[in-house]
Image 1 (cartoon, helix red, strand yellow):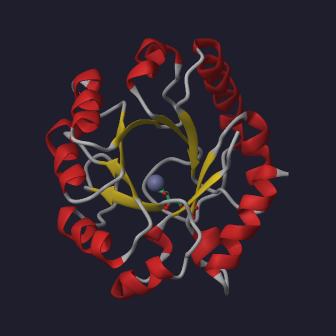
Image 2: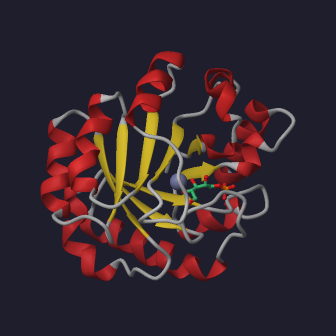
Image 3: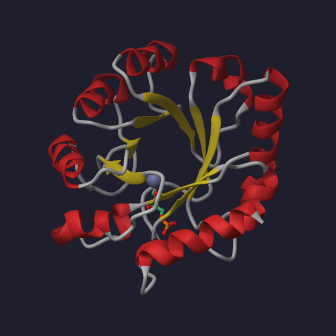
Amino acid sequence: MSVQISPSILSADFARLAEEAQAVEGADWLHVDVMDNHFVPNLTLGVPVVESLRRATGIPLDCHLMIEQPDRWAPAFVEAGAGSVTFHAEAAAAPVRLAREIRAKGARASMALKPATPIEPYEDLLPELDMLLVMTVEPGFGGQAFLDIMLPKIRRTRALIDRYGLQMWLQVDGGVSAETIERCAEAGADVFVAGSAVYGADDPAAAVKALREQAAS
Ligand code: DX5
Ligand code: ZN
């Protein structure tokens, strides 16, 4: 299983987004958290910022939509240049149609589960997705403590992916750090979002490299 690291720019300086994107050279993705103050109690950025980021970095953009009505908005994020678009299962009106639309427009389609949302009701949808995101904090803010109680869900999701023989990725997001990444990898995750653990470090690129090595160990 190959390890991928996706630093979250939520923990970066929003006045210097281009430089902050360039500071994580070597990362596989740049994780972009879109929040609407309805699905989560926080407000961040939207389509125009993604368009600008696309021009500012060669790192592919991993857009995590923590918004209501993702069916309406996700296609615009693909058009803005996202390489992967994640919508929340709890918010999507028609997740199969939405995943197909994201793929048809040329991006990877991904679905996220909040901590209290089980994977089992969505088992049959997995072949429609390129990635499943298991949230390891309640979405809305960076810098929260990793929820160890999510490890069983990561394991169950990995077992389902393997049972179906799927090539899809399994992402974790929230509280991923030098202290917690090995537990996530051991449970079966292969794409790791890290905000404060990367942008809170003196050398963000070195932090990405260290996390990658730890996850692979
Ligand atoms: C939280 C966001 C995360 C956040 C992670 O709702 O989805 O991507 O930026 O930040 P850390 O790694 O600091 O928990
Ligand atoms: Zn996120």
